Length: 74
Image 1 (cartoon, one colour):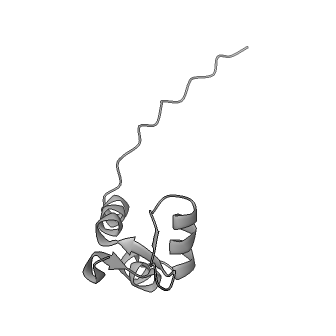
Image 2 (tube, rainbow, N blue to C red; image 1 turned 180 degrees about the horizontal axis):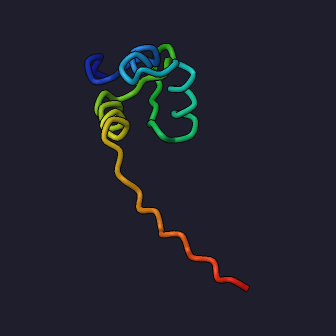
Image 3 (cartoon, rainbow, N blue to C red; image 1 turned 180 degrees about the vertical axis):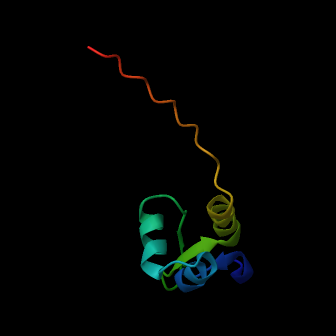
């Protein structure tokens, strides 16, 4: 594992401007892939995955909302 390619929880939290527990929760939910350091079992996150998540946060894809159906009088 190359050190420059991975970030620790605190580094990810700082980069995404969220709390470290949020990063852990996102990892547990599968929103952000996590890896473990083989020697100390620390959580590690690929820099590319974090940057992709950050892009999604800063530039969210608009979601089409279906138009409301008119209610017919009884």
